[in-house]
Image (cartoon, rainbow, N blue to C red; front, side, top):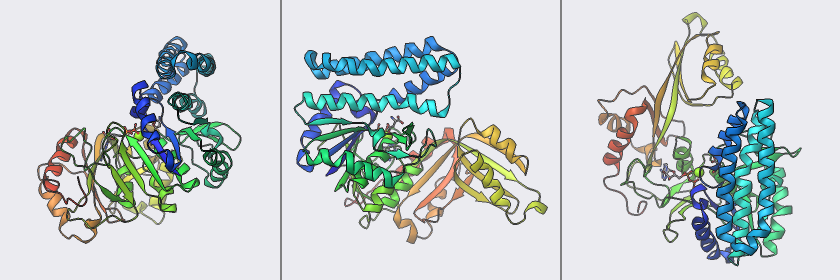
Length: 457
Ligand code: ADP
Ligand code: ASP
Ligand code: MG
């Protein structure tokens, strides 16, 4: 069997879903499980509704919900035709009634918790997966909807719940495998799961890729296909650099580093389940389905280019923690990291000196509270509007002088932090956010003017 995951833009309207049906039709003999994201922008909109309701703006929240209802009805209507849609209408209607009721409840309390946010956010994938399953039937495919919340078991860490693999795999074998054996095409929402007690959770923004990989690993897929709106993993974000090249083959390690440092095309956790079972992952374009895309596999071929790609992660804040020398005793770093841990803020880049530690975190609302806790043990400064740039390539391991080459062409750029992870396949540095796009373009021109045709298209 295989897993085919379609992202938000790939299911954004009836035309896109029609394309998905055609693509899946072409793969029927591979026995696909289809995983879908919410229709594009729907998760953002659901979170905005939750926020509005939580702030007591019930009217505003319900207005957003109405727009969402109309968009889904319109899409379903166009896909299903009158007869099928009439049947399906009441099912969708019941979900939208639930959503409205939930928003009224949140509005009445005037507060929204992470647990409730997850309940609201889950509507996106729940609705899209039901519509896509029904659309498959309308297109003559044996589509059948499976509620992912009954398969993906997670802990109760709402908004970024952690999958519990053993139980998830058992549920997949029990609920999804028999459908495949009966020649059905299961259609499941990504991103959503539930705790053992059955409370709805989500596994983090962009997490549908991760869901696809979890399902693929749990069902022993031959491959996992991530269908999106670009030709594959590219040498950098094509929105930033229109002349970015497609990477034909890349290793799991390289892809993971790129994803971690901002290449949004793949959720950073996606490769973990794939590595465990050594399942190749393909990134493919639903708007250009004949393109070969990118194959992510255990070992990439030798490559004459030093780097495979450049990733950019904006919205980064540098936190500088300085301590008087006498405090630099054993356990000091631990006490700093404990504070980050207590605030559930994860650190991306670290650099230390004898008296100070600089760390970067994704810019978020918790930073002032984090800083005030850090201030109890050291002097703290923080500064937002930074960006992380990360160059990735396995050849970095055995190419001396690489850093000099990179920084040599950035002589006029103020570099705030530099790091090379222990994986030895990335070179990472932090600069001002508003200079980042230009720096990426400059590096791209330098390192990808010529490319190895074996590895890049
Ligand atoms: P989906 O909704 O299908 O999950 P995403 O928006 O999450 O799609 O990811 C696809 C986007 O990732 C592309 O449109 C592209 O702008 C962006 N992107 C960032 N870095 C890269 C890269 N190195 N290669 C390809 N796409 C990238
Ligand atoms: N819909 C979710 C999000 O927007 C998950 C995903 O699309 O991967 O974050
Ligand atoms: Mg995505």
